[in-house]
Length: 50
Length: 406
Image (cartoon, rainbow over all chains, first blue to last red; front, side, top):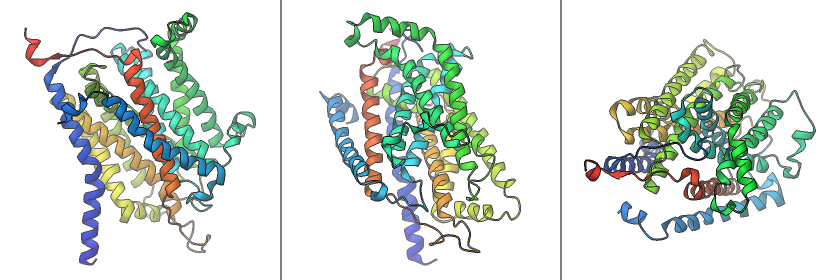
């Protein structure tokens, strides 16, 4: 395997794996941050509580 | 910064307007398919199933939360799962809508979509799938109907709302029907692949089991993921945190059962040299497929996702739960992609060569990408509108932590 092949594989792995993970991580941090700021209300069954 | 964007006036309608762009691209692409036929795609006799089937299978797998969570809530006495089952049913309805849109494009003769119901081909796996999917879609419609007629728009039509109340009383029966139909077609989708004797990578009796178990794990995880994101965007609580953690744990455990089954299917199923099967295993675990297989399907979408889903409750970590559910979703899409693509990439036979060329390289055409994008955007728009306006998903206002001790 030439150096170029190896480099292109590394770049492919970074893009292919990192591409979807970065936005997922970002959303996970945001959602977790919001949950830390709140206390859940007591929830009762409503209307069409399937 | 995100907080400020979310509080922008009219942000919801801007989001909807933004989604109209890919929907427009999808409609234009679909028009190309309907007027010119499948010639505008990169599908061929050698690669008859492509991107649309991957989207179709992924949509159906990610909708499996509807039947599994409804069954847990209505049949297995987990009343605390009812709020999340409600979200799952709506996700399921949209997922099956997307799947049917993909199939309408893929069959090549869309005007004959109804033939399956009239001309019964009882020896065909795809016929069984067609019947189950359409019947289950009707069940999902009945499950969602009572929630839709709760909209203020229907206050004038009291008879519709009364009908909704009556249908709602049959929720346990609908859950039984949903479970039966889903158990049949989620696994027979795997069976459709499993009976293809000419394709060594598919031809095995374990395919139906692998499909149903992976779908249940992914469907539950996807519902958790969607609920978490909707709650964050709405700043309201739809499902109690503990329920989300519990469902996450169940999904994680099922995901590990799937990985265990997959491990034995791969090792014992191809022990020694099995003609065709050994070559397909090599193709799957190396090169381009190797990246999606090891990276997404097994490590991130399997082991890491399952560990996160199970550990999230113990660590009381919503971030971990969201990561776990998101990775599970990516893993199932990678699995359905690998399963579909591998079958057509591997040569049928090299000695003697049965096809010309021996193996096919398939990359979806722009029209295929356009329609897939349009379908996903359409489902996202419908989901956004449903979560915003349907009274069943109104949710509860949480209390800020600072004032909770007052």
